[in-house]
Image 1 (cartoon, rainbow, N blue to C red):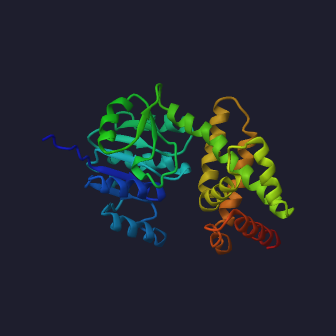
Image 2: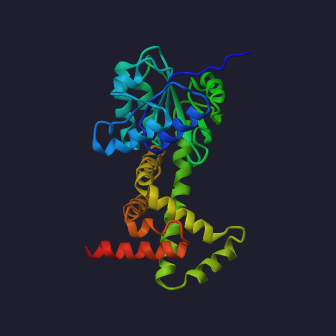
Image 3: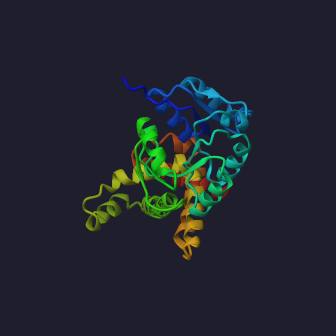
Length: 302
């Protein structure tokens, strides 16, 4: 009987993505998983640590502790922190582990991070191209870079779903960042369009009119889904879109639409934290829109 390879996995960042990956890997039989998050020492990290204990993840005491003896390091931090996260663990890495950078950042940031880890770890550019739930560690990934082919069998054995992108580091990131121009942009346009329709008391009429151009799409379902995603993840999506703007500039394009998407996503992310909005996210899109509109009006008055 062939013995299954069960690597020692280290997670840098233990937010939604890190927790989803950790819980999925544990259920798939990966026993040695450690996690570190810069919030662990603070009261704000209490919920993260509780989640780690629930999933059977070892809570590391520092960046040095999490990196030590790891076979596979997965970086899942906020977009703005990806390079700093690599810097925090670089002096403590040994054994030349794989370093999976799944952060939603520009190709240039991925290239800079890979350069930082040259000779220290085998860097892999990874792009997550679907919501992390419900598939968790099985969420489709794009991987790129000189170590992509070598790490692929190990990841597949860990039940991860992936596709190798030909080309250098940054290619997977570029697909993710350019794709996000459309995905997150449509979310922002959906909110703006349907909120205007709600305020004009024309929600049903506008929804029906959209069917004339896109008869195969259920705009009621799309509106509800996109508003919920923005309400719960708008601030993180805004940070990702800032990286999309960087990507477009790296390609010589002015990110006019992207910069507006950043503003709308960030605004909705803030409004989405309000209890009055959160309480409607399991209701229909009409109820969501009324709550969002009321919250926006309250914000203007304050």
